[in-house]
Length: 97
Image 1: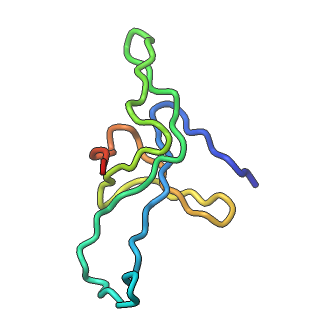
Image 2: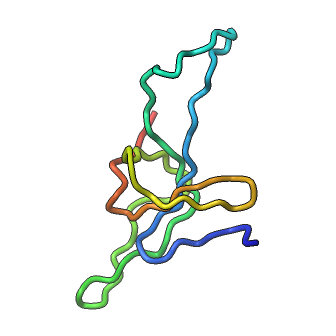
């Protein structure tokens, strides 16, 4: 089984960020708490080709925190971890502190 995946073209491999189910003081949070659908970029493809054959690079890099669409992406399991594979166009934006 493969241990590392390098996405093709303009695809991005994302590890979804799962928010904690309880606070630091031990209070359990209800499941209906609004959650931000975000993830961390694990790997990025080289980019897509335009009509002239020129490479259009992906505008994200490894380590970026991104906002993900509610639906979509291809589920990929590598070892024990689960990842999502998206096209560059599907990512809604980047999140910054």
